[in-house]
Image 1 (cartoon, helix red, strand yellow):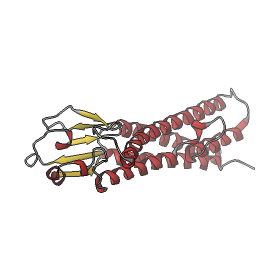
Image 2 (cartoon, rainbow, N blue to C red; image 1 turned 135 degrees about the horizontal axis):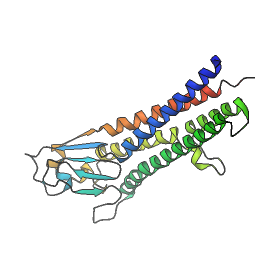
Image 3 (spheres, rainbow, N blue to C red; image 1 turned 45 degrees about the vertical axis):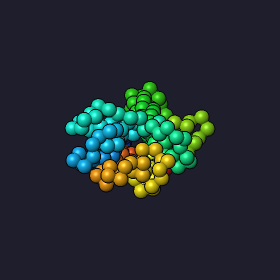
Image 4 (cartoon, helix red, strand yellow; image 1 turned 180 degrees about the vertical axis):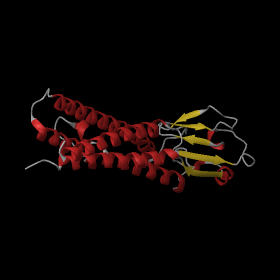
Length: 238
C-alpha cells in the first residue's frame, strides 16, 4: 500500500469505529432511565404520589427509585396527570418531551442507514464487484461524511440529512425542558416543582444523570466520525 492509501484506510476505519461507538452510546442514552434523578428526603415527606418519592427519569418514563415505597411505579412523560386543561406552557413541555426521544430515534436510524450504505459500497469496491476505481471510494467518504455531519433535507433522501446537528438540537431541547420545569413556577405546568407542595419542593434535590453525558459523547463522537470520513475524502488525487 502506498502512504496515501494507508492514510485513507486508517481514516475510514476510524470513521466506522467512531460511528459504531456513537450508535451504541446513543442507544444506551435513548433507552436509559437516568437522564434526571430526583432525590427526596424521606424523613420530610410522606409519600402520597410519585412526586413525593425519589425517582429516576428517562426520555420515555419517570419511575420511582428502588428504595422507595412506590418502587416499580412509573408514569409516562407524554401525558398529563392533571385533571384541568393545560395552558400553552404546559403543552409546550409535553411537546418538547415527545420531540427529544423521537428526534433521537430519527438521528440513530439515519446514522445506521448511512453507515450501512457506506459499508456496503466500500465492500463492493474492495471486492471488485463495482469497478469505478479508487476515486469512487473517496467520493463515498465525502458524501457519507457530509450526510452524517450536516442537517437539512435533500429531495428523496430525508434519512441521510439528519445526524450530528439534529442530535445536538435534542440535547438543547432537553436542557430547555429541564429549565422550564424546575425554574419557571407555573401551577398549570405538568409535573413541575410549582405544582408540588412546598415541603415536597424544599425536600427535593435534582441532578443530571449519566445519560446526559452519554448524549453529549454521542454528539462529539458522531462529529469525529464525520470528520474522519471527510478527511479520507480529501485524499482524492488530482
